Length: 161
Ligand code: MG
Image (cartoon, rainbow, N blue to C red; front, side):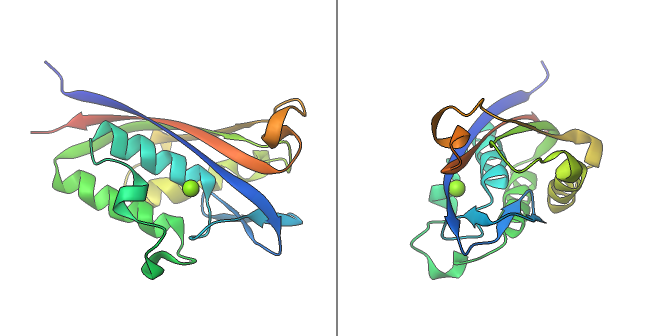
């Protein structure tokens, strides 16, 4: 039987003034950015949790504790590359990733392809294996009123041994 493993990831960060907005490793032009210990890239964090979930590596809080000064301000793409290395070490290949950003604004469409490419590059996989999409939430809730952003991701892995 084919050894396929699915994982789901979810993350939330608060929006704050005086921070850069980094999503999928792309600096998005906006008047606020996400607050967090690392670069607070909510999209990459959800993707990492989907991957660690599918591979039973736990979660990113366990792998990269936010109490560790080594991860202060770090690019989340670097952490994603480390997750990719751990997956390869355990004999997993990424079949595909689908990620959804929940944000009222700004418009993400112009950046989607670069976000997917950045994450694919960090993982050393083909860009067509990663999909990024976004939705507003009709002004409802914390994503709708602009106090934060959330992201969901699913990942499918194939165990090669
Ligand atoms: Mg996070």
